[in-house]
Length: 115
Image (cartoon, rainbow, N blue to C red):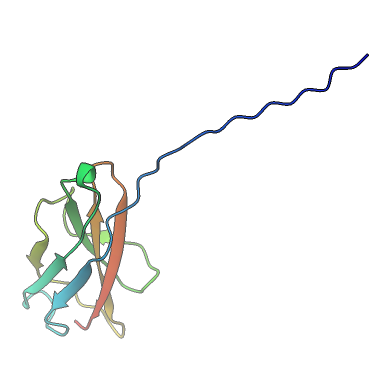
């Protein structure tokens, strides 16, 4: 005699998503290397109430897919940042802003500038 049996289990997982629904703007969109002050602004980002506070990092790439050069050493508490940028010969710089929640999940946005 064989006994046929079956079992099942239900597992519910909750995952953390990154901040959403924000914008990233760099102003001005064109300037001179090492003299123009570029303002980076990450605005209107939101996340679940338990995921706050949000923190921010800023950087740039010499191409849209190149290596990120950070402009701040660690997450920054401010949604805006002012800096100068290096010369980018024959290419636009891609400025990058990242918005992190308290669990280190992040969203990344980019904005091209001419330097």
